[in-house]
Image 1 (cartoon, helix red, strand yellow):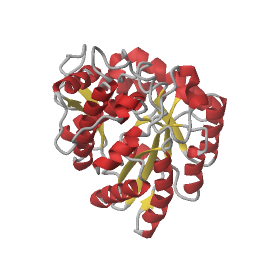
Image 2 (image 1 turned 90 degrees about the vertical axis):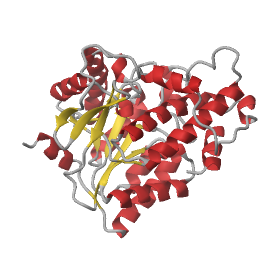
Image 3 (image 1 turned 45 degrees about the horizontal axis):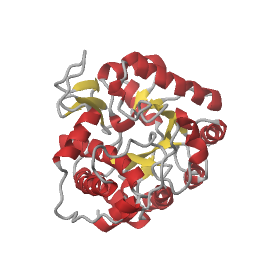
Length: 366
């Protein structure tokens, strides 16, 4: 991943909606972080926006590289993915300030500083014991299919298996939609005629226009499934900040919106950030009858606005693994453009986009 590409993407980001009720109306095709929660507070103390921008950018560059180079499911990947998720949200409101734009930093040598590391640790609760939760060893949800592993000893992360897929088989998944300004519609057009994909949607985006989009997804044979109402809690923190009943209430609210719009209950659930406690995940499986679904090919499509770079990264990751559950977002313009190229590339290179029902059978089977 090239530093210049990351910087150009981050500098040009737009601001998030400031209130939950404005989510749907304020989305645009240029707002690549439109799925996230309301913007975090400004840098604390005497820190200038430029200084915060520099340290967050250096850390994001570091963790993005780590995530891209690490095998999904490993400790290094999980830590890098989660840290990068936090940092990209912190950079978004700083990207438009004059002080941030004028900031200079040598990203080839910079590494996360102590203050940034402490912020990330506090956000995810690293180093804080969780109540009523077994911290180790990993917790098996379904042998060979889904396991909860702990990042930094206490943050439960859903690690997905794809042994049920044959070599050359791919499942396509899209998070954080629906987009109501044409991006999701473009994905649907590109995927017409291929096997159904899974769209993990946010309930906060299911106003009238959003419900119309997911109704179209379902009518075209795709799976409209649970991600959460917010991007996890209302303040953007992981589901571990909720009790199990709070998690179920959040998911139930979203499931009702999905079923009302599509006439079908959701079949899959992917927790935001991949973070969820085992007891909460099992409760969701029991109450909503969903199949838990992580990913095994992370395109990191939020990390660059360059479609060519993203396409090369994505096809490289698929070639390396030979199959997989691909994570993308139908809210990023670059992802939507790459998806159209990817569909053709998969067919031209002997890959098959398979029906997500294969995952249900693998999870529900003996």
